[in-house]
Length: 499
Image (cartoon, rainbow, N blue to C red; front, side, top):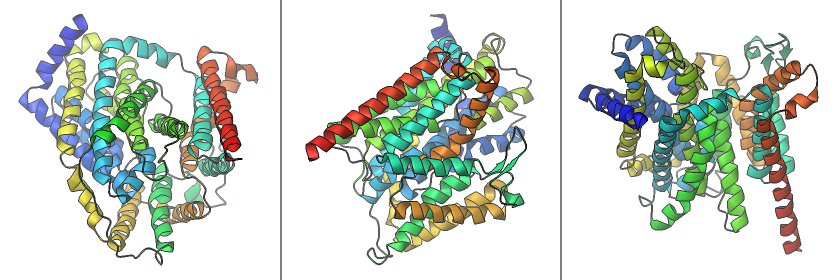
């Protein structure tokens, strides 16, 4: 009851006209920034911190939270319409969202994304409000061995379940891990796979890999097929809104994606990429069991699940930030710095020393979710009209858009060169039937897996048993074994039926 009264007090503060205005400004800015590949919400908040330093702290953090939430949907918009995720957390959304757009179902994909974002955010924030102590215990219980088990689970899910072809999936994962190793090893100082090129000493940016594989690779792939598909063909946007069948196929993925995403925001495991890919793999596996899978051709479940997981992770990432002063993402790290600039120290005492700010911030998360829904749901058909641009102009625009986004991120021409090299790799992968998802997950989670394994082995003084020494690791490995056994049984049955 005490928590409920504090939350009501937070709503009374967050619903003042000025704080409502800051929430609206934050959501709009976040949506715009999310659309632009290479910028991201972390950079947007970093740029806003010095500008908002003279503001009231409550209003400033309400705006930051709006930017954080709005950026997730903005990234999904370009992932669906242009196959160019504004942020890496929307990569999984592009795998089915873009085929939906090409099948004249862009409004349905956008509506599914924004409704899933809203539902997941509301559920996750509610859990944060009432169960944050339990979530803090989960965060404290994760160490290097647990992170390593988590990354191995993500590797298995993407290379085996998501890709369908295990051999090609593992090969694609190996390519991603090789790209992740480029640069100077932080622990030993050894230069790896740089081939004497100083521009590669800092590694290959995730933005470069994401935009190159998904955007440039797709453009090159479509250009190679231009003889069979006229370049001036216009992609129509189709009819708007979700029908009863779409809602029936989406509501369970929304719930499952939320359930997958909630715990991942609490632990610093590489952001929202793991839960979105796990959600995508889960929905693909369930669809295959039902025998009515549209995955690869525009399955709405492949948009609903990952987007719900993405936004649930975003909401719960505030738990360790506020309760422990532990950021679980780049955006949360920037917000931690903003707290320190205002002389506020996140931690266990924050909920008592700065109760007005904390509860107004939590209440603003509900408000921001509603604003995001109200602003974007009616405009889904308007966004989808981008697809009416003739395809030769559209793809030319994607190339320019991607190039500017990558250059803006670090102002380095070497990143632009790498962008087109990675794009050529993406084209070859598509040409020979290799999946893209394992490459992306290898690049993103490879460094985390390597660092976690090294730290775990150092803690165990070389004893491999350290990797299996906690209930969390045993549970994760048990899930892997069960998934592998289920995959083998399913494929054995299919072979028997086909013969």
